[in-house]
Image 1 (tube, rainbow, N blue to C red):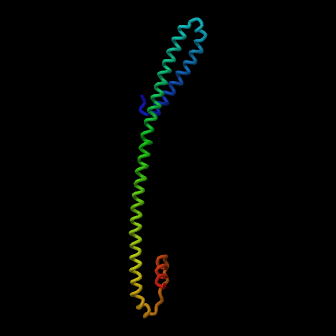
Image 2: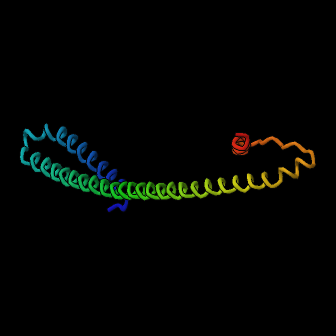
Length: 148
């Protein structure tokens, strides 16, 4: 018996095709002789049909084995996809938490920069320098808030 269900299926299909062809060929060639010896014809055809029935039973077993061997990997694949979806959801939650932490860090940093600007503004005014315009979105937002 073949280890691989697909090989078994192909082997049984070949055997069934061979037996069916043999049965048709034998029936055609013995038909002429069957008129004179009907018992021989019936016995031979019955043997061929029994072999064919056995082969068909083997074919059914091979199909069942093939279905079983493909169903389990497919089920495992679906389970792994579910696990992957859960892992991605966990990653999304972690990224959301990290985004909150980074937003809080940015807010605190903006507060620190605003305090630094407040402390350094008189020094820069005495030195006669003009403030450098902000280049980032957050810096522009902070500068606009100070002007208001």
